[in-house]
Image 1 (cartoon, rainbow, N blue to C red):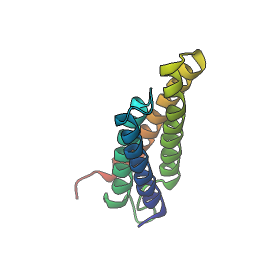
Image 2 (cartoon, rainbow, N blue to C red; image 1 turned 90 degrees about the horizontal axis):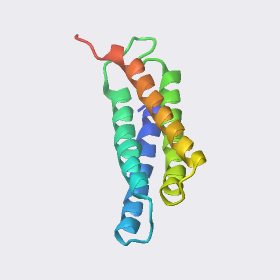
Image 3 (cartoon, helix red, strand yellow; image 1 turned 90 degrees about the vertical axis):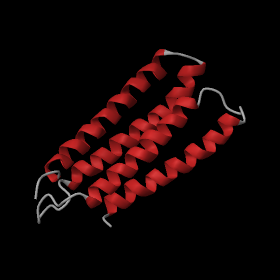
Length: 132
């Protein structure tokens, strides 16, 4: 299994574990303002990264020289996705409890980073989805 795939999948498992722990805290009403973080950890941290990792591994080869497409784009996608997720995990609780322009703009930046990660993934994977 390629390193990039393993990295996506292991990070997905970490995010899933964090989301489960956060879900327990939310159910126990120990935390406030973390529900959006919980959802993002599940959707972008776990599901999206698991899908990206498995797709990079299992989709047909791009070419013999570059079987998984442009690996650099894959790493950029990983970095942008997780940077956006981290920024959101920090800014979302602040914005929900003490709204301010800095945390608001941090959420905008996090969304842009995650959007760019998705675009890079699609761009890098598109040519691998073809007829035989």
